[in-house]
Image (cartoon, rainbow, N blue to C red; front, side, top):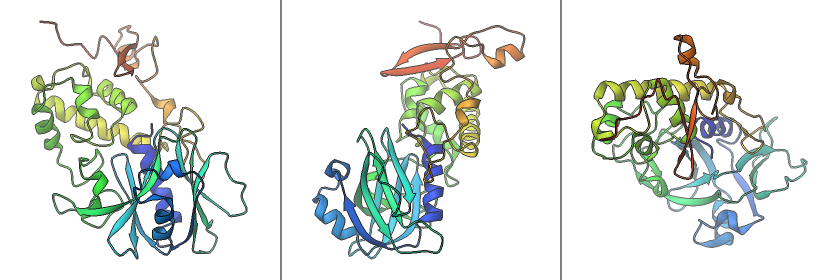
Length: 307
């Protein structure tokens, strides 16, 4: 599933191509992709038609487009799920095999006129959501200048890259819990945007085991983890995100290449690069984790002692 860097790459692409353009028509080709819009397909198409995309915003992995022209302030939320893609295309381009929703936009010189939502596995979707005021009264997230966000995202904490986030909040949030460290940083109500891949990478970079109990975590360790999360996300964003298959792409179809820089995730049985640099020999191990996998170094990420 796309994590913060992948969704931010999509947001930046959308901001370039669709911001300030008016939705001239909407075509839903598969009602399952708008199932979260409780008023149905017809209402989704009619309500969205005529609206102008004021901005494209993101908090964590949550992406939305603020709309002007609605009777009640709202936003178009796009949830990518496992395989969702938002692509900008010329109307003359052939329909993608798994095209679900088509938005025709007002013309803009040298800009494609269609925004297409493509989703092979249909775990994602689009829906309209009313807006609520942010709890702290500050802009909601990346790309937003408004202190409002979709009601559907009200429970989501500020993310790793948010300039309005105080890193000390991560320490406070972790110490309030009694759970494994990796589980806690994947909790979007504690810190948003972190998924399985970047959790493993940041924990490896910080030299911390994801099995640590958050009740034992020290402030210096949390700040080290926070710095690692910011660094990993920044580098991944610069690389266009992580693509393991053809399902994650930017709005122009380009793939990310951060997978080439991974130090832990997916490297089971390969030498830990940090241990190698320090004259040690250790192999990255894989452990089952919440139906997925965790990757870590048994030497430089020591596990907590069993009591």
